Amino acid sequence: MPKRRTRTSSVRSKAVPGTSRSRRNGAPASPDLHAVNEDIASGFDEMADLLALSGENPFRIRAYRRAAQVVRALPEELADSIARGFDPDSLPGIGPDLATKIREFAATGHCRALDELRGSVPASLRELLSLPGIGPQRARALFQALKVHDLPALQKAVEAHRVRQVPGFGARTEETLRLHFATQAGQEKRVRRTAASAHARNLQAHLAALPGVSRVEVAGSFRRFRDTVGDLDLVVCCDARIDLRKALLEYPETARLLAAGSTRLSILLRSGLQADIRVVPRRSFGAALYYFTGSKAHNIHVRRIAMSRGLKINEYGVFKGTARIAGDTEESVFAAVELPYIPPELREDRGEIEAAGAGTLPRLVEAGDLRGDLHVHTVATDGTAPLRDMVEAARRANLAYMAVTDHGKHIGAVHGLDATALDRQIDEIDALNAANRGFTIFKGVEVDVLEDGSLALPDAVLRRLDLVVAAVHGHFNLDRRQQTDRLLRVLDQRCVSILAHPTGRLLGERPGIDCDWSPVFRRASARPCYLELNAQPLRLDLDDILVREAAANGILISIASDAHGINDFGHLPLGIMQARRGWITAAQVLNTRPARELQGLLKRTFL
DNA sequence: GCCGTTTTCGGCCCGACTGTTTTCAGTCG
Image (cartoon, rainbow, N blue to C red; front, side, top):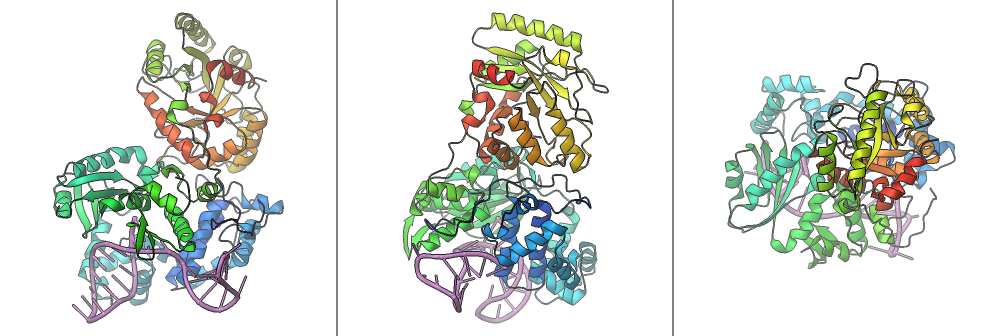
């Protein structure tokens, strides 16, 4: 990453952060390993919190938060790139001081400044920042007045009605905290986007049906198609006379009204999700939709660009002095700051603003680009429909081919196909292919990766197939080095076409394996072996950041439904959106190829 | 703590809502 100080436009032009990988399962670093990016980012986040709790300069705190974000979004481990001579000072928002701290983190896994901060502020005080209405100032006030320094101590103070005695606090605040401890404490904050989807659409429909409401859109991370969402943001355009507060209280899914102003309302849904509703006039709808789609980092970056051009962006429009020059549509907001339209799913401040400014935004893959699906199960193993029905379902989903990849037999696995059963399936596929013109069924298998990285079926069996999809289904807890070696050994096998759901994560249930992906991606690219973006709502694996890094290594991505039933081809659009979040173009996707071209690409994976 | 085509010092995104106070700080998104 070259250091570029010269400016060609007011778009920031320091080295552009790309994608990142991080310690996926939250395990502490092994003693022999230096800090990975996630450790450095977490360190900076903690420093920001502790500085805030110390009452430090807010802009200094922001610098640490920004540094955490930048480090988290890097395509490569900083420790590695620093070893090769990379200067962290060239990163946006990283100056001499933070660069020194990054070097210290990378080399030793520690940072003296952080250790000192921990000595001056109780680190557990950070827990209080997770509470509603408690920020650094009030957490500090609670600590100074009541010597409360963690959640259990505060809960006791709430129950003893001691909080209301602290200056700046009152009975209402104490009651809010009591309610939180009684109902919310320990609950998982983020939920899968797919789980939030029905709640979002129902609320949207409820609001849209109100007389006087002309438009309702769901914004926020939901609109950006993040795999999980923390809350729902809705932008509403309506008649000034309508009583939204009443309408929300009457909504059957409302558990509690959290806030209700004239333009901003918040409710807690019975599902536990919070929904924030913003009301704007019609002419501001585009500006508001843009503003509340975010992300925060993206918004701040674009507002800074606006500022450098003498403009101001808020949820009501783009302003030059007091004159409103844009805001009825999102496109007009972008145009006002001389940027092309950036799709919501890219708005994370991961280089999209620089790319838009330079005219180099990629043309992202679209649902219509997919021609086939390379990971499909049938009733022969754990699917719910016979092969013939799955083929019909794939055709209805406008696909021209699919690969049957039932599970191969493996010690302990139930209903896996052995060599004989696989033979029978191959015959069935040949017959169907002969009868089905215009649709191709590829013969495949999903074979287990064993603990040592070898495959659960012999080459002699695998060679009879068109493709072999290898997948990790166990031994998720090996350490980073073992897991990395394991995947590298998979790529040494003679017959491996696609590595399926590579991290093995299950959203909200199981973290992905801890693996150093850079060498894995390099070897997959050289071999070649393709990587899957599994579109199952529970998996969405690879994630947006890793898929971007994989594609940047020249690896073709298979966007696959992992269908187990006739309706599961409906998962593919989720995979498409995740791929778009990873900046993936149609050319970077394996299954946008016509069947014949694909055949050639699959042949190359058998060594 | 970072940054600069208005700046190497003096700025740093912006507005709404709540609760506690009595005119606004703190929090939130």
